[in-house]
Image (cartoon, rainbow, N blue to C red; front, side, top):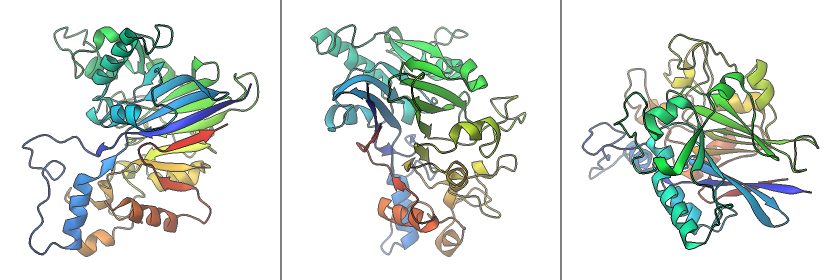
Length: 366
């Protein structure tokens, strides 16, 4: 048996969920005057920039898709699953891995479950092919606050109001605390990794055996690290209290070094002196560049880039004009994909396999 794993990138929505009427620069569309500066245009690009917030892991056996794992389901994902000619198109979904409860990662789950239920009723998928209730792998915290009914407040249906009868929780909290793999398919194991982004959030390490099982051969490894604010550092302010994960040493490094593929957000490329960012916390002290340097993945795709922290000053306001270009980060904030691709390649050693992810992009391992 020789299986293949197709990793399909989904989603194309704003990098930030916007609230109507909110005056902050994330929500309010920048206005261009009669003579807009290059910085004014860059701010508008940042506001309009699309982010990719989901992926499909499709196992293929001799040309036939035999298992489909969806990771998050935010904005634009449903359109991708229905319209784009990828290995995930038209396939039943065995499970959803949820990283965290922000709307750009879960807002499409209601619609997804409605569509899957209709597909079973219409006979497109049999009951054996498409499980309902659909297993949702996430932490208890994410389930109670953002997905399912809150046991402490039964009247609070969370963000997803119509989906509860069609999904069930598979709690990954204990596995995340232990960095323990969970078998979701004989050829695919997933390890949830505590992440400091939103309370209860996780990243995922996926290990895939083309031989069909963990007892035979070597696994191919995929890291799914989008919306990664930091890894817990054992601080009292961490949600994952009592856990300290160093991406450059210890267990986390051992699990992530030499990944075959890394899908990662790019909130911040690399902390610069005097530059405030989530990743620049002294207890953590890394950005995306540092993770790429430490883990040395064979391939990297930037899947969720806002450029927000690459342009933010110490007082929380945007850097503008020359100050923005002197911030020490090669991508220099919100830019087009073409500019970002050039900046990434200029900042890394020759031969580094890195690119910007696009909706519908499919990468195959095995």
